[in-house]
Image 1 (cartoon, one colour):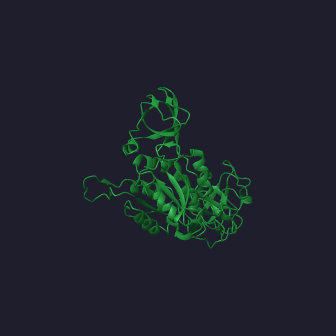
Image 2 (image 1 turned 60 degrees about the vertical axis):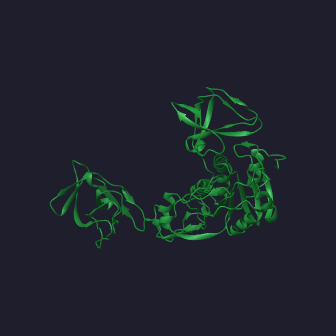
Image 3 (image 1 turned 90 degrees about the vertical axis):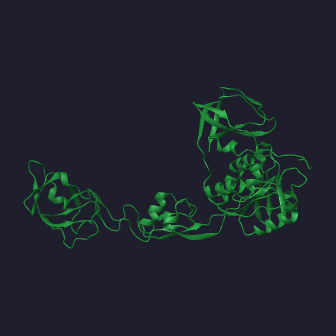
Length: 402
């Protein structure tokens, strides 16, 4: 056995991770329908006005405002009807004094008109005339050309997260695609002679690979592209071959092989290919987590136990991945509730303790580091500081929701 000689605090681990962040520079063009949630890699400037014409903001009548200034219900102004204008068409008729045109919401304002009277303030007088019951000011009920976006405006800036509204703004200026930062490619594999992919037959002593799938789901949800690899055997040569096979990725994540056993050889493989930044964090679960640089590529060595692996993926991998993907920090929802049952915590280690929510309280859900149901049957987790050994029933706790 090769015991840990020391561990670093969670705060120190985060500091070292932050220092290693290098946001992705690779870019690609994507279709606009695929752009939501991506990060713009270049400024997008409007080549045109939006709307590209003055348009009616109401169903009503396009008029010359001066013609209507004296109009009231008891003394309406009568105007001659020249045209009916619908969306998607330009009128060929110019509005002169004493005339008007029926117009639909969103339809282009005809030449000569400078206001729209809403239909509720009008009345038909035969087929050719319209009575106006209220005066209109210049520009009333008219959306001017370029009122939304003017030619030359920055619609999106490089580094902006493309929300649905920003995607809509890009569509409004006629762009069918957009330059975005690529999603980081994340190589993922599990280590260990006992690990078998789901779908295969289990021999005595073997277990199905869990971590490749939980890590892949985490990566997909937080801006990366998971690139799964077959499990690596417990030999230095096999681990080195796996590291070499992952060399094209922007981030490498192994699970297992980073603890203290004689056959936990990830540390030896890292020594042959790169530089260990830390190995061992004073947290529970997930103490044997490692971080290294392998040929310039960031490397996470996650614990093999499923709960430890996934827990530290939420706590450490997600912030790191989102930063290199240029995404904003993750902000999970939290709620404050009383603890439903007393919890005893390991002294000297910052603990992430999974809980279930029931009847307005948080109840312990943690079974063990090797039990995936410690997380799959939990609603979230609470944090217990390293200097706190007991959290009593009834204590108000902050639950971070999954």
